[in-house]
Length: 450
Image (cartoon, rainbow, N blue to C red; front, side):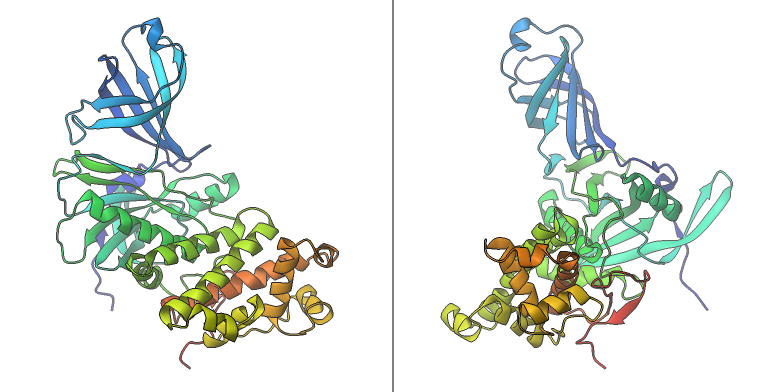
């Protein structure tokens, strides 16, 4: 018998656009600090066609010529609205155009906290952009125009001593299909972030936590998804402070992820990966490894993806052997004198098979004829990488149609498994080295307890 309560969902879930994630962050009076003139300032967070923060300042009458012509200088505005934004000075408003003699427009650097940032709060609200279906969760209900709606859309994800409650929109599957066709952006889930113990926190406390959630979830997806525009509100729903940041998001299609909710809940990934990212000793390394991995899944050409993936192999090998096991650099190079040996060692220590997959015939053939090791993936993949970054032997790669694609698929899957072993994951994964397969076809990681 299921005794889980049915939660009342946020009515805003029914008002979300199906084809846009753009949002107005500010629309109200402001004082231009240089001219001393009041204007109507509008700031919009946009994801399409270009991700960023755009502003427009409209003055009640034409500006003097000396303020219109010449160098486009950065502006500074004092916000005059009646909420937490009041009297906040928005500096470094980069000016890019003057549409007419009473209007200025430009862009803002993404990532600043705006408002009464010194005020402690108990929770912030966020909007996830371009998350997929992450599986069933706790029951939700909401009253729509046609009556009540019910769906299993609530999940809880942990990072360190923080918990994020994530509610999927009831029409998520239909929205995702539209985004797949349009390569567009939309808000797919609403979320609330709190400390697990209920303690209050400041704006500066929460920003690295949001980044940890973004990296952990993006690692699971193999592409960027964005927990965006975190807002602290008072009991009347007025803004206290808000993160003005358009965090990177990718279209919902184009990447086959190692993660699927059939293999593990997303909370397992956020808990394990988030712990690494927030660790003071390894956090920066973990973030770099994950960003490099994401670049290897879909960014640029195959050659660039292979290079990005190899940077993960090299850096993770140094992290595990030199920084964690305490092996000196000299001893490390003596034990593993070349890139293939270092690659092979980390696979063996992680109980990851290093044979070339049978479903990659071009790579197997290359391993026999060029790398001289018929079944050894590290030797074949390193030989391909060397031919791409050094000027000798590159035609061994380009004269073999399909080889680069197969090398990329095997290499990226190896990198996924290496990173998963490092963070302590023991669940199931999709085999991303497969060129064909079914979504949700998952297998235990090689080191999983039998």
